[in-house]
Length: 174
Image (cartoon, one colour):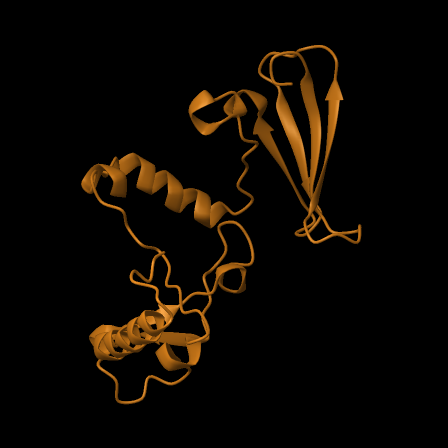
């Protein structure tokens, strides 16, 4: 599409159809135009943007149609890119970093609305997927705190191990 057409317009964040995800309408011209700016109409914010079509012709970015409708986040991203800091992958090339916690049905044992008298250095904002981030480049929101209670985690693991051994399971990962 990027090779052989001019993308005249993208209409994004359309929620008029009864489906869970947003829709996109792409208007194309069969001929290719050099240095073309695509008009993006955002139905959620009711704003319109112009983006260089050539900016999407990027194999390293998997040819994604990116645009940033927020001037503040654009400035922040530009500053981050200008600093040329190392990425997490570059800093820790042989590490697998966990970015989530699997709580199964035990969320209420590790998350709390009030901080209470828990150790501050073991309390973390508990971000819950799409509940925490409603839009790209949006503000992260949380309503609970995750408290890393190692002794509670160990006792739960010990109980599960005993229960699984009674069932004949030697390795709980099996």
